[in-house]
Amino acid sequence: MINDTWERRSSITTIYERKWEIKAKDILDFLPKTNCSECGLLTCFAFAMALVKGQKHLTDCSALSKPEFVQDQEALARLLQTGA
Ligand code: SF4
Image (cartoon, rainbow, N blue to C red; front, side, top):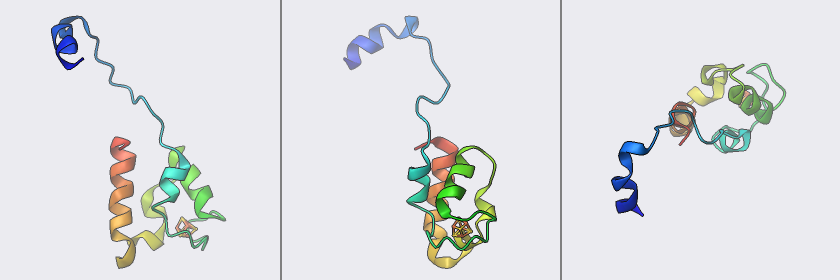
């Protein structure tokens, strides 16, 4: 399959659009899940939904800046930037 794709490479059109959507559940996995509401939303899931819609930013969750969540914050940044 790889060789076939390579042979056809000149006729393949590159698509730069993201082929998958980031799901709120994927984001929720990295949030503190304390539902503290400091971001202005009632739950971390609501915050995840707002992140997906571009209505909130990672910096709106003050809990993510705590040392114990630094790795989660970095993972979320990668997820939101690349979708991976
Ligand atoms: S500030 Fe962060 S931890 Fe608190 S509810 Fe919002 S997303 Fe959850």
